[in-house]
Length: 267
Image (cartoon, rainbow, N blue to C red; front, side, top):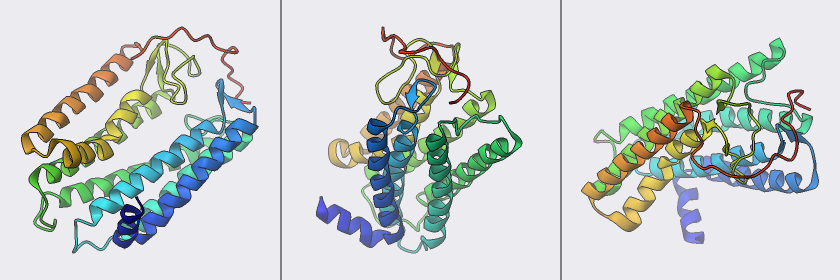
């Protein structure tokens, strides 16, 4: 593990340290979730910044690793663009958590609506820049790699980009729940609704193709055809979960009972 981290640091030092910082902040948020009782839509307010910070660690470390396969690519612009914009996003989410208010979908005032829009702009820039990195893996600029692993990186980035933009479906609706209010009972930690469609599930599954496909291809499949088949099945799964959510149906039905009525005052 230490050798892996040392290699990652060598490949992209800014993203290595940023991922480590986000991981530390994620642990802080997890600790605050145990120490505070502030909730937003029946979920501890610090769970959301925990999830975003931890996901950011996985994202930046994956991209740092893949960029290492592009020896002629100057990663500095990409790295610092990602660091600045995702710091803004995580910082705003954490600020709202401390206030016991929504970060996403909060257009209660002009300032809140502007900040929500700026988050959308930030993630759009990061996603488009990442799509450009993905396109480079279809060019001769990439270092020699096993074909199955190369295709896994290509398709992992592609699915990440597609399902990152699926987030705009939630933004347009100002809600992630279909067929009911946000805040209904859901899965532990992830909080995907037990009772209604939840657009976050496909968003999560699709974006984490960025890590899942290359890892399984490199360590387990070791075959181009198996990798292509896995990517196809994975894409169909994420799409099916999205369709299910749009129809207002949960991917898992549970019997958990809400501990309190869904609130709308964003306390």
